[in-house]
Length: 186
Length: 197
Image 1: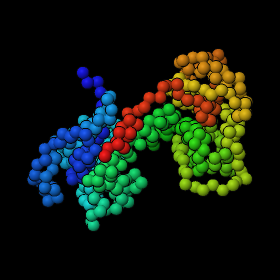
Image 2: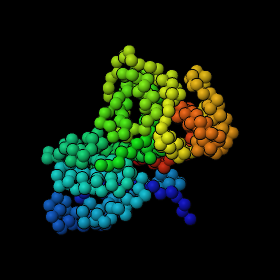
Image 3: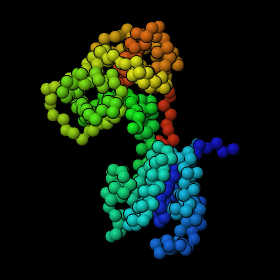
Image 4: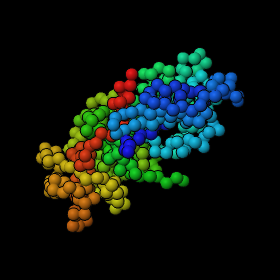
């Protein structure tokens, strides 16, 4: 019988933000959703897109695995976001910096997850090297957060993907160390 | 009008400042007041106008807003007092209102069993009797939570004395949780993710 503990981490973000790539690069095993041709108005941006969800497993030790869940980016799948976020340690929200529509959608997603729970959320701004990309300050202003909370990231580079997960874990650890102090804030 | 939530969250902030020897400013607000008050902190001193009274208020009254700002560069100030004696005096002089006692107690009642450091006379706390009671209680009882300690007070006055010594050991970082430290999931994952090549 397998008695391994499971830690769940959510990788979310609007369409074409790099979720599948991130999961692929940091997982030991990957069960990906089906990539199909995008047929709606999104087809002009991306030939193939993920239907269903991405799922990756990172083996930590004999007693612990991390399950990385990539939520479907399209807004019509938002009924799944709440279900997937249950019990998650934290969330990485990826945003395509070159697409204002994606930034608008990311704002909605950020507010959705913020209202859902107080789990840590790390934000990765992808495609910062594109000429039409919006600045970190612009994205921060759109989301209503401090720009220091946003990390520029290229999910195709493994170190960048690792850095996002490390930032998330460091925030989780910091929150854990404050547990005793938290009794004064209740 | 939204209800103003008042807590003693300035105490973990003070503890954090003292145990990490930080410098900066504490900005805080009492109740629904528009006035944002400020105390400057260096690694050894508090400074600001009427600083001793300010520290006493900070120990005695729950805040609705309390933030730390480490960006400000501190310069020597004549209106300064050494941190530890200032906190000891503030606790000694504190006269909490009954509903503030309830808020403060409510926080300590949620804490797990604690270990308390051996009394150090150089701290200069005036009620060493209460400190010794807490120290022996934490050493001799596996279930030495603040809640159990407060239950040992015979009278209301003793309960205030015990509450004061709990505030002292908490703020000065002289207590720690007895819960065994287990490497958390996040720490284990962090080690593993750093190894991903």
